[in-house]
Length: 297
Image (cartoon, rainbow, N blue to C red; front, side, top):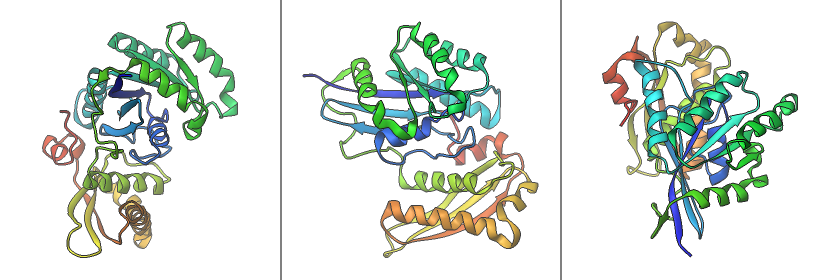
């Protein structure tokens, strides 16, 4: 029996549940998950391997319209994922308010001429169940496999989904990555994403999307404690009080939550030094975006 391996690009609207899906499919956390749309900024690679196949999931940012700055980077990341993937997995959420935007995503996937499958996500949201069959009929008319379910309950559709992906992935002599690997992110990148996730989860008011996390120093070979020095970079001065909080309470909450998760992942004690810095207009500053890794390859 030939082995199958390749890249599976996750495509969908912001907040469709792509990051949650890939985390549960792989069984490990490889992408940040919040209820806020557009939290995925860079391509995240999660790797699923079994005896028949290896699917390298590429969780791309949701589709945005932009001609410059950070949003242009997000748009380019999505385009790169589509062009570089062997198979596309379209994730459609039943709570998407605009049918036209669903149609737009479908048209983009079809135009790529790549093999693809579709998942209708969040079907456990009872107030939107009437939409499931409408979306399913629309997708089924395109003669592609359509799965329904909730990203957090992947056991209900995981096996048939992987079978459909296996049928569409190219044949290879061996897996693309070592069988023990579940993500291609390094720990420095992972730490940055964890801290950014905790910022989004902690800030319940208007979320400053001009927020990024920069790891200044990551020291893991000087004793039993991993030392991480990081800064939360903001685009506007009036976002600082929101992130810092009264007497620093919000920043401490973000730091504590980040440290606990990093300790769980690393299996070691973590010292986290976290500061806030404002750099006005960084979202359109090419040099800063390059430093943060927000430049399309």
